[in-house]
Image 1 (cartoon, rainbow over the protein chains, first blue to last red):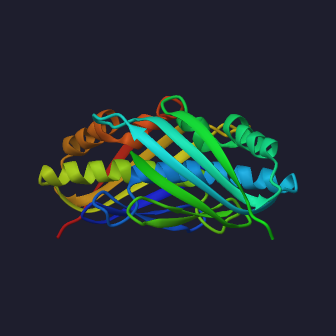
Image 2: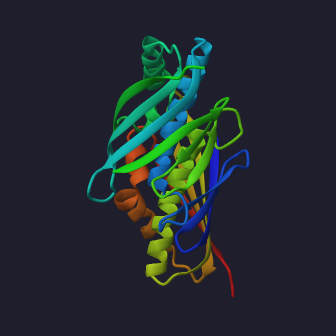
Length: 135
Length: 135
């Protein structure tokens, strides 16, 4: 069981605190992360942790990993996410394309709790790019 | 279209940055919010913004609002959320129970993008408590 508490500050600003004391400012008017953007950050972090963990176990020499997540919401309330694009940019030395493809597939189909929770409503489409980084 | 970029720092740590420059540390080993907890924070902030906005429009004298979100995940990978309990604690002067119930209902059924996106997989159950706070 995971637990988060959000406490109203003023205006439309809240501070949300997780079970191990980490806190984040959320706001409906720009004075903090917007909750709908934080949903995309949750997906980015979730799959990023999976992918970097898998690539390092496979001894891929990753020097940089960036995940760009773009979300399309329905135009009317409640602005449900209908499509989320996830782009992975992996830099490193002799990174194997097959290893990256497999890591992303494992995250999508097997490990990422955030993706698994939202994917009924939001279609998740992934792509990746590998950039060589000579030492 | 909303966009977030997550950049790997080291270990299982990422920094995610939203479109207006807000950033958050996410981590798979405790050095930041866990992505699956941030999903609960997104829901807390989303519905909190709705509820405080509606209650203030209805001229309810709210002095404090706290939202406690508890999430139950499936025991096996991908640890999909199956149930989320949302408890609202409203403090203020002569707060109307019907106004709080209506504000929560509107958030759940009409306005909250995060709830609408996750609710196919995660059953969302709400409750509230009002505490009198004399001026």
